[in-house]
Image (cartoon, rainbow, N blue to C red):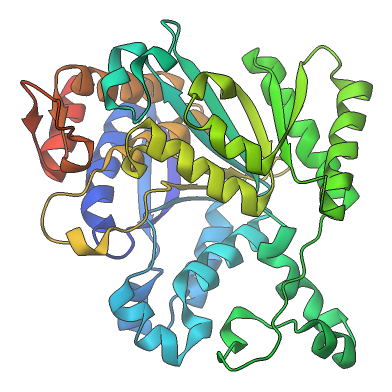
Length: 385
């Protein structure tokens, strides 16, 4: 049996409870492929601050970069965000930990798969007839670098002071609230876009899915470059893949008819963050979202559910761990544990078909439904393996 070490961030709020289930399931499922996973504790977030005075301890960052793969439970808790975080905004863990990891690890591609099954149509917040018998695959591939999320951080050190002042550019931690002007610098580099779209089209070709490219090219200059680059890579390298373009504002309405998005969906950092969250909610709950962030060159990767830390549910055994568990399946597939990944996904679907639900998945029209908590969800999925 081969061994694989993976950095583990259990996280804040109710994340440790959810991650405990996902970790057990990942370890067991990986054995199907002859892989023994060793998770290495790597503290980040407010729980790390309470021990070391930093939400991203230097040794945790060093360990993550060394191992190259991290299973990330999520960081952030309003109890600390609004107290310590307000006094020391540079320590806000979502910015300090997540954006640093994305930048340092070169995590260009953020995969957020949303899968609708006809047999589970009753979970979705759309009309059942909007889900065809064959099901729906929405593979959101968000460009995780550059855009407005990194502009100020990337360019403030390079710009003259008068330009920074004129544009109102500030880091998030520097904003006091009494400024007359605050600006965010949003950008895309041609070379990064080409690498991104090359990966998107290659994935779509392998998955035999069309590509929908989301932009705002009718208003924003950077999205003119986005669209032109998409067309260039498509024409020159992947003409066999179907490509269509969609403006981000009209794309919102398509979330309610999910079959319209049966595709690989290419979207920028900001737009992809917003739209894929909406897609997860339309599927049934943010607690169902899985997510992986990949460096296409080095294969370094961060696996993080998009469900947040649910701090109000901490200690109640009520948080939905399915997003974390499905993220574990993405992680197993990345390390070559394909049988284990498929087993996890099948186990989750079996449990849902049998009528087991955490509170966020309950519907007023549900009949013969069994309400369960975090630990019971993990136990059932583990048993189904």
